[in-house]
Image (cartoon, rainbow, N blue to C red; front, side, top):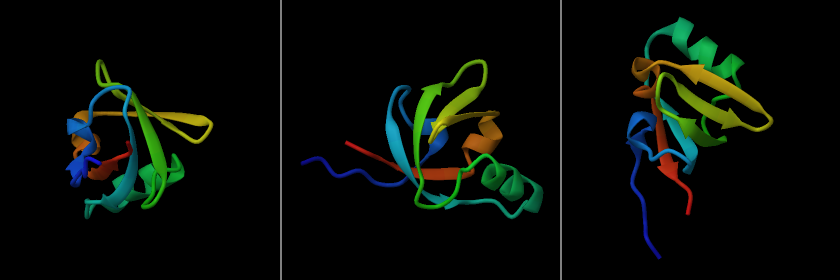
Length: 79
């Protein structure tokens, strides 16, 4: 069984599912924005695309953001 280590969402492969481990930002506005989209520690996300924006599926919703924001979201890929 392959074990994955933590990586920023920006390094995850498209069409891959991952568990959010940590939101690494000190910017309260970014933190509130991510949490409002349902992105928080422990949730599972699915990376749909990286260009022109990062688009993830979170539950039944979709969220889109830029690379800088994707770099703040640290995940572990799910097999």
